[in-house]
Image (tube, rainbow, N blue to C red; front, side, top):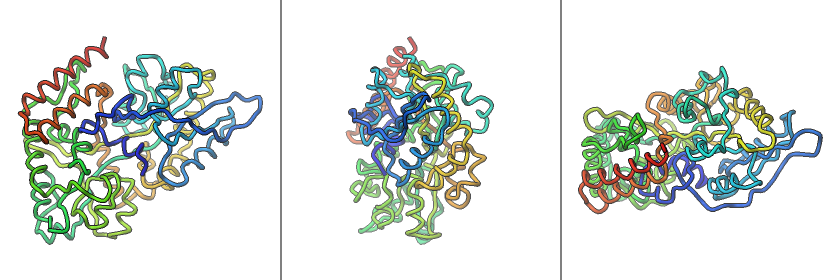
Length: 427
């Protein structure tokens, strides 16, 4: 698992969002790296450059290079950026060395769109819009226009072992209170009850506490925070008690994005990524269950975060129309390649639900349950959940959970900062 894919979903409002800048959906920035060009060739065809972050799954680089070579309309060179991808893209877009096509998690940032850096791809998606998962397309749409085409979907979920729950005489937890009780019941001297990161889950579970309480990050009119509510105070209060209880494992062999602690028996339950489902099933066979994050309090709801690395066309590229044709060919029309991406490299969900049955790892069992979680309970960071908004919330969350400060005071202060940020971006 690369740090880039982990950050696709990790920093949606938790304490670790401090590093956020020009986001990959979850707003994490890194310093620029020099991409390595591969593929392409000289001919009368136009030249296009395409950037990818360095996927951790074996085979992805070879596949995207092969796909690029199969496009008849241009010579497409694939640049594989080994680190610091998002900041590298953001920096390149300000220069003459910007890529013609680049992937970005959950589409371009609001600042990219408002700066005119991303091309309108509404015509590229066309009538195929309804074939994509609606929740994914909502995140890629701003002012009625579509700004990227989804490539594949990743998501997070809760892993547990039915045999351990049965031994504790418990049902799979559907509320935060039940999750706390299950963690306490399964904890032993050698095994933690629940693991969601070596920071105690503050980084990865931050926005889940909002969504699980039935709230939103940003208000519907995009003018104020959506989280400053007594329901959040109560949810964070429950989580603080959990954080302090000893049942929440805080020191595992790897962080949450790697299921090794769950597989090794360091924890009875773990918050992790769908990408690890194959190795979890290899370890435990049928003794594996998956759940969304449970609801919290009255009016709460289950939730899973998802992210879709999506293909964006540089609006200032030299061959914008050809770049749009390439994106349409690869990520709208070439469904065989979309299925291959889901089947061959770890475990991912196709962006088109009609392809679920062809994607072996999500066609049945826990994978199919996970894909349904995205459709039924999926959430993605609001386009207006900028790095500054995320930082304000994560600071408040840390102050309440780690330092014991008053929730109403902290989240009201955070909401004021979010309102100021929204005034800026709406200006």
